[in-house]
Length: 178
Ligand SMILES: [Zn+2]
Image 1 (tube, rainbow, N blue to C red):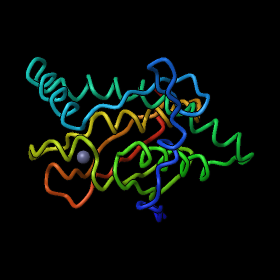
Image 2: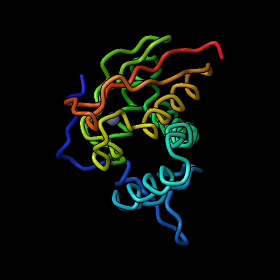
Image 3: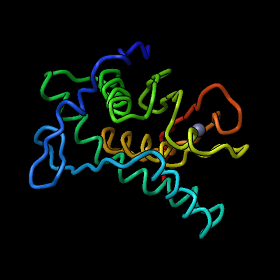
Image 4: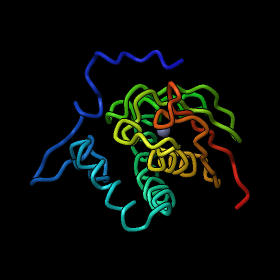
């Protein structure tokens, strides 16, 4: 579980295609941009400054859209390897997050109605030390990936967060009727 080679090269980065100033992974239709983690931190702070605690909802919603786009790449990889199955899907999804630079990601549990994922150096937690859970973007991304792949509604909660002193961030992604 989670024993990925963190010292090797990132497949997502290796497969990045650069054409006419646009980045895509392999032949996917989803475009990517590279931004410094510091820029993401500044974005988080700006949103929080303007909307206050609603930053959680804003970034959760944004994360969900991003997650749906990432699911496309996960499905592409599954097709390429001609594999299927929930465990494989969930593993490919967390691996992709690692390859995109979200730090070490571990899949703790994968059932159709409930996934548990740990992140050891999530982008948001590295930036923020706020005494509360802050990884709303990551939380949204996980829910978005699950929704797109499973074709159902999911809600993700962050039950542990490095920003409040926990050793890692832990997310529970539960199927929801709404
Ligand atoms: Zn966190």
